[in-house]
Length: 158
Image 1 (cartoon, helix red, strand yellow):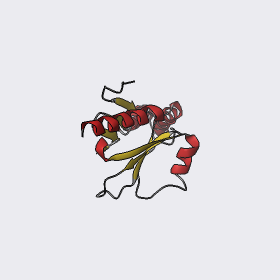
Image 2 (spheres, helix red, strand yellow):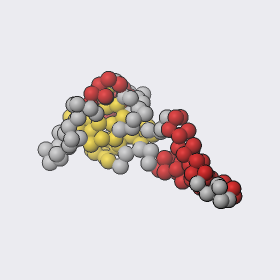
Image 3 (tube, helix red, strand yellow):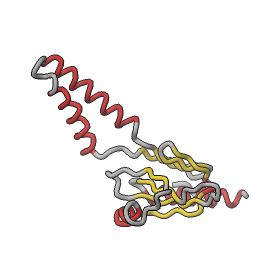
């Protein structure tokens, strides 16, 4: 954990749960059942290709969160820390509320169903219609602390 004098810097990959990996591999392998009655060799090839393609897609689409001294990145979206006004840690129940009845349709979402906790990053950019980002994370306290430290460091240098 960085001290108050060091810039915050964390990174987290939102990897799927073991169950998601198992289902993905099982589905890819099951694709080989389609050509298997005609040719067992074709069935084996389709199974292997199916597993490789689906696992590759899962890896490529897994987002990364990172907080640096100047920027917050959630998946493909990035925002300068100077545009963040508040960070809220969300436990499982608060996250369920936030993505349910309390959701603002204009919010940016980087959520994964297998991660029950997250953070809400409230923005202060008057030009941006997005009121906040809702981001899944396994470590909401660490992400929130890193963002708060980056905001604090930035406010001291201005």
